[in-house]
Length: 563
View 1 (cartoon, rainbow, N blue to C red):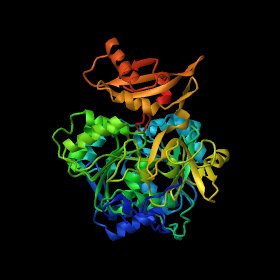
View 2: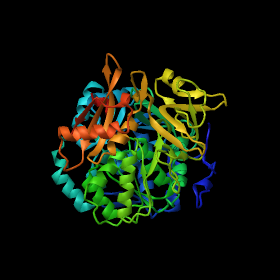
View 3: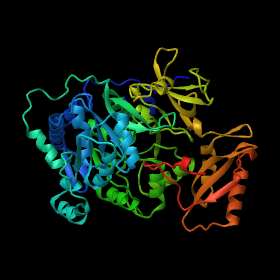
View 4: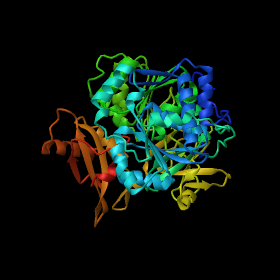
């Protein structure tokens, strides 16, 4: 059944609005309006430096002018290969200011991957950090660009830290070649000093046209460029602020999720910039430094993938730390197991946080989150209720036909954050963006789930991840929840292995808790634990113990790398 949020938020999730009003401003215009209304408040915090909104606005303007004088025009795509550093944010909004399109990718991408991104998005200008210059020399030897702009972390640091960073780190990087292609960020900004005879800002920009490209495996499994609009991002920002149920203005968000990812860019950055909050940029994640940032900055909101919260809960870096500063903790990007939710809720209670972790659901094809557990009501296993103006249908797999409540099918989404489409993939667009009988375009996510009578959504897993063994459907996420509940297990991942008789047989990979030693007796105990809770046909034929499980670039368990 189609559902929407129950109904401006006050004291209950039932009071959430059905509808929000969205302006006709672009992403950059929206953020610049925030800056004009509150110029002295800190927009970005970066390694000890505070950047107020008036400085952010000035840097956006300067970056926009520099790109324009470099020849970038409305519709031009520019590759932005940056971690969470201020220049990445300046590029995002500066390019948007002139109607150009930032294509955000992970700086740890392999050489062939970067070459693919450049080709797929037709980018002839790229921006990255000087520490990745050597890699880009290899990239551009195969796939030339017109300009490669190289920023430095040191230029955004306080004076003493800047000097130390130059001496200890940046002096090791290769010097820029005088080839007319590579240019430092400092020299790039000199282009902003040139006179401009026209109004360079795209003030008449169509907010429903392409504004940002993010890359994803998509619903069909191959890497594709996802075209997203100003409206997609602005709607997401307003929806997320409302669903948080807390005042976001003048709040602080610890922005550890990377800006090449919809979760990091849409929630940790754009939502905060639209609402007038502070994004504390985390360029590189490790648990110890993350804990130190929490202690030093006392953020109000943190967001991450389940592996981040698992790492926090099992380490001692936050022992004895008061976390009453937290107003919201959000998990997304991957399924949050029931056991991990219980563990992290207990962690929050032990640290004086008066909240519980809230799980969200979304895909890059709708920027990021489109559904979130309400602040005052949760159901075990549920990912919550849809955002305002966002509708969910559960359809029979392979069709546009809705199924009854509590029946599993494909999760389909309709709303203002749904993508424009994939670059160069008309067949996938036709299969993923479908017009249903109501005349609306629905995003077919490729995810299995169901909906109950109250409109709560339950995610099962990717359709393609479903295992068929001896004719039975087996859902790895359900098995993982059971295995994770064993006291010796820290995390698990279940896959299907080809089998001539059963088609597929079940194999479980586990990571043990610290201090627990692997042994045949322990594996037998885990198997017995499973046999009491799992049907015989769905039982793992083998348990493999590993020190760690492979992760994707954003911290999800990379189950496709297991065999």
